[in-house]
Length: 190
Image (cartoon, rainbow, N blue to C red; front, side, top):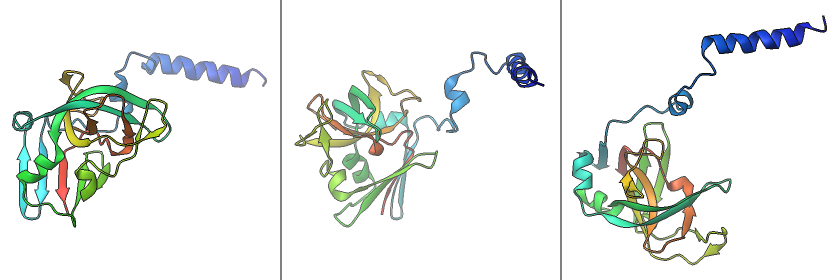
C-alpha cells in the first residue's frame, strides 16, 4: 500500500508525456481564451453614428509618437516603450460630438472594458510615477490607440493590433496599466 501513491503519480506523469501534454505547444494558444480579433477592425459608436475602420484607415490618420510605460496593479512594470498610434480625441471626432457629459467605453473581444471620462480622454486626471514607482507630477499625456511599439506593429501577445496606451513626450513616465486595454475593437461614446 505504501507504494501505491508514488506509482500512481508516476503513471499519471507517463500518461501526460504519452499524450503530448509536455510538448512544445504554443504558450499563447495553450493559455489564452481570447479569440484572435479581426485584423485591424475598430468600431466607433457615437449615438446613431457607427464607423468601422480597418488597419489601413487607422494607420493613415495623423499619428502621435512618444513614450509609454505602465505598471500593473501588483507592481509589474511594462516598458518603457516607444509608441505610435492615433489620439483617442481624433478617433472620437470622426464619429461626432463629445462633451464633458460623455464617457468613452473602450472594449475588447475578451469582455474587458475600461471607461474614460471626459477629462481622461483629454489626457488629464491620471496618476503618474517615476521608475521607482514614486508619484510624480504629470507631464502632458495623450491617450492613444497604439498600433506600433518600439518601431514594430503591435504583436497580438502585446495587445495588438490595437491597444490603448497613455503616452507622453517625456520618457520614463509610468501610468497605471489597467487602462491599457488590449485587443481594442470598440470605442463607444455614452
